[in-house]
Amino acid sequence: DLESYLTDYDPRIAAKAAALLTAWTGLPRTAAPRPLPAPTVTLADVQALRGQRLRVTIAGRGAFDIALDPDFAPLASVRIARRAAEGYYNGLTFHRVAPNFVIQGGSPGANEYAGDAFYMRDEVGIHRRGTVGISTRGRDTGDAQMFVNLVDSPRLDHQYTVFGTVVSMTGPDVHAPE
Image 1: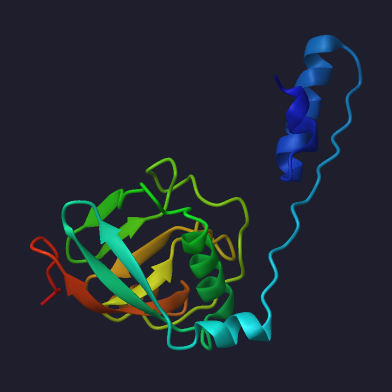
Image 2: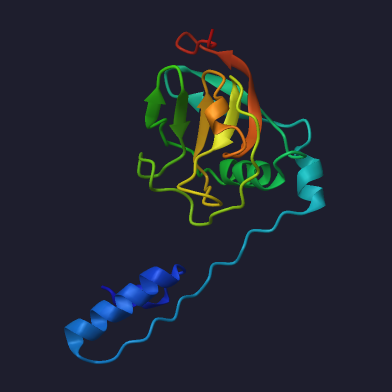
């Protein structure tokens, strides 16, 4: 089962698999990581998203619309829009609800550690109530997980990507933060 990890895109995983297989079998194994192709973002992609919104529907609860800001955060805006169009978010949850802070979702594992395969460069911004950002596990490790600021969060300013703003909400259980 470890054989496939010899070619994992993460060189640390590939190296660890090689070390384990060498130790267990006594035969030298070599890591051969295969980097994933980087997603491309073109000017046409950015232009196509200007003025666009994403609708997030929470089953049985309501929905909210996010106005994308592809001029300020082109990588994140294009990536989130692409993943949404591919159905990546279908059936996923908001696994983290921190009152008076954020709601966070977009993890296939419903946790803060499982996300999309590619990391992207940070496009840091100002985190006001209603802005939507990208969750990370450190600098330039954003994936497809997103969070909505429920309050102004200056402690996040200039540390996390902001790619949009919640502009409308509907449904009996969806309430605007006060």
